[in-house]
Length: 113
Image (spheres, rainbow, N blue to C red):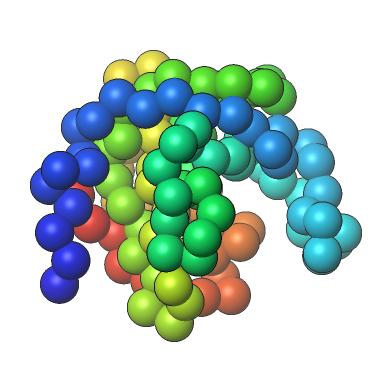
């Protein structure tokens, strides 16, 4: 099991490259119901900046600053997805899974806190 203690609770900043209502670049039938982006300057195992799901915003964003409240660890992929809360709310595992299901239904993963 990976150790995410150094990540959980950390405040991060970044940019949104797939705002609410946008389409996935390779799968245009997939519409993003939440803001999805990346943390500036943190490189993930896929060689790109660390991906994040943003909770606590009901409008499209360009940038964000928030607290990492969980990590969704994909068991059948090299990427983890950080779950960032903008409003300080500590969403339940069930709320997180329901929110990210639109994309994560194609993967097998677990939430770490």
